Image (tube, rainbow, N blue to C red):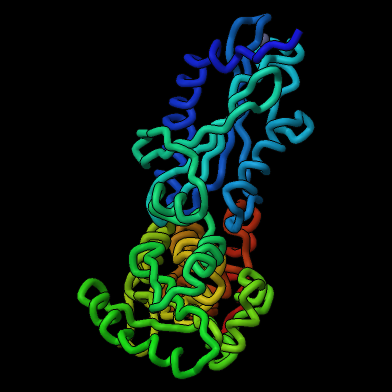
Length: 414
Ligand SMILES: [Zn+2]
């Protein structure tokens, strides 16, 4: 006889408790500590009839793409939850090892730093399989609310205040406004607008559609400077160095021909100061202070700590982020996290050396070059601080030992 699985109802109280624990014990501490670097995380909760307890298994999802539709993300998470061989669903009770505990629910969390909220998928089980997925939004303080399932990329953006995938939202934006009769723009995060000059094959009409452009930009500039206006086609026209597999040719493939022929003109209006403010919050996780170090024509940024003081040109990173269809946060993680980690490692080096070689004098005159003097006052080592730091693994004692040995041996002395 067929009967509707009754676990979803029977286990309702256990699920509420499990979700609260997921929020407070797992996600809140991760968001507080790692900010925009918070990784996706999943917890699988089972009920054991033998020991009459619930048990949970926690896994990370570090390899899940930034660039999935909600459908694809749900499918991915559901597939992993369905099969025990994927390492998430326990085959035996984690407490008493009794086989086949009853699945209750699985929780998956992804942080959306653009809106500072956490998306949770709650996979609800009945008869051993996922019967339903529910959606929740959690604040960094751990308060969560249940939400209706977003219908599409727009709905998701409206509900969460951030896109799940900006590339997917780009496609939806052009689909929606392809035949509009005016310039269309949408704000995807503070300081960042997508824009579209809709379809026309008549150059005169195309020009006329830009008549109000100046006024639109002036209106935006009452709020932020919005100093960057760039067309996706500028990649070719102005030679912006974006590889084809990361450019609109790939993630807007259906429209790439129209962009090339200029029958449509997608563009971005963005504010570099907001981008740098996002970078500053990211760098603060590493104890690095960030200041803009240039006028409004360039994008030089100063990274400094007690010893380190380095200037880098963030202009190329900024334009890559815009032309590759990332949010500010996603783009920085993709194109600047390695550099930030190198700077953070460099910032640690002087203190490590002072502790290891207390009779030496360790200095970083100018903030970029490491100079070490021996107890007799002779300069025994000099090297570029960042390059030197990145040659060693400062996460292990062996790595730190090798770093100290190199200074002691004077290998880099000049
Ligand atoms: Zn058990």
